[in-house]
Amino acid sequence: MRVMIDYRPALRRPTGVGAFVHQLVTALAGLECDGTAPLDPLELTVFSASWKDRLEHAEPPVSAAVRTIDRRIPVRLLNLAWHRAGWPPVEAIVGRQFDVVHSPHPLLVPSRSAAQVITIHDLDFLDNPDRTTGEVRRDYPALVRRHAARAAHVVVPSRHTATEVERRLHVPPEAISVCPNGAPDWPARDAPPAVGHVLFVGTLEPRKNIAGLLDAYARLVTRAPGVPDLVLAGGGGADDWLERTARPPLAGRVRRTGYLDTPALRALFAGARVLVLPSLDEGFGLPALEAMTVGVPVVASNRGALPEVVGDAGVLVDPTDTTAIADALERVLTDDALAAGCTARGLRRARAFNWQASARSLRRAYRTAIEGRTQRAGTPA
Image 1 (cartoon, rainbow, N blue to C red):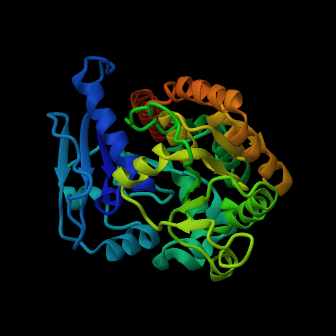
Image 2: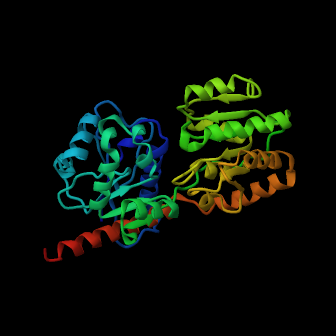
Image 3: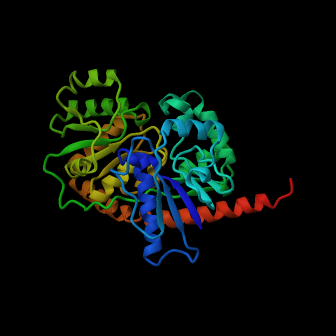
């Protein structure tokens, strides 16, 4: 099976989609090396064409099964041609034929004959298209609808996202595969910190319910001033949120870190008493999995994919009920038995999420995409 994956998102900061594609490529290559791969051998090509971004943050694995194609092509120019005109086919750039071309985001990589696979991490772009990239911002939802209809297969990280893709983009369920994210290879901490902090990890945007989190934390510090400070780890953020954290009762109690590299993020998790993730929607909710991997108790929203990820390992709350969020945080911070139980269950649950299992699911999705393309090619017009 000859597969090409668009690796360009991994050329910059290895977060989000970039981290996803890097981990999947590494896991796919690992299947070829550890003897667990199916009989159908995989020839994996990673496409890393860019004018200025080079392979410095996340090198693809060195393996006989992996070939890297590096070209000096401006990313925006190529994306504009690919996403708007469907040209040029990737084979014309790479000089090879493929059975599958996989885009790690919702827009297709053009191909002459390969089965085209896309990844849809969440559907926030349907409700907030202004937060997409500049060259496709004005009609991104329409583009994604068109590309999803043409894709041979759609990969999603959760059953929740699969249901939403079927419902809102009208993709048939047989053309959707769930490939959950894997847990990071981080060691569990020895013990929780004596003081620590309440931690939020994610982009500071409305979907993450930062306003609701600040409301809940303000309630908490008003009635329990001795609780740990709140740390907001992530980029973005509106000015009104920043102004609010400078006023009582939040003044001096909320710290923003901005973007953090992996070592700094690991250290922040290690020092957390609890992770709070009160999102209004999540396609997966990776910070919850990261917290469970380290041994940090989780208070999370009962919406989106978070119940799939957290299960019974944390405390789930209605994200629109700020009193419930504050109560849950106070319980975890003051009830040692509850916190210890969340930690133990979280460590067990995190082990169920691994990139090798996702890679095997992805191989099956590729085979389904190829078979579907072959069947359509043999159907009379």
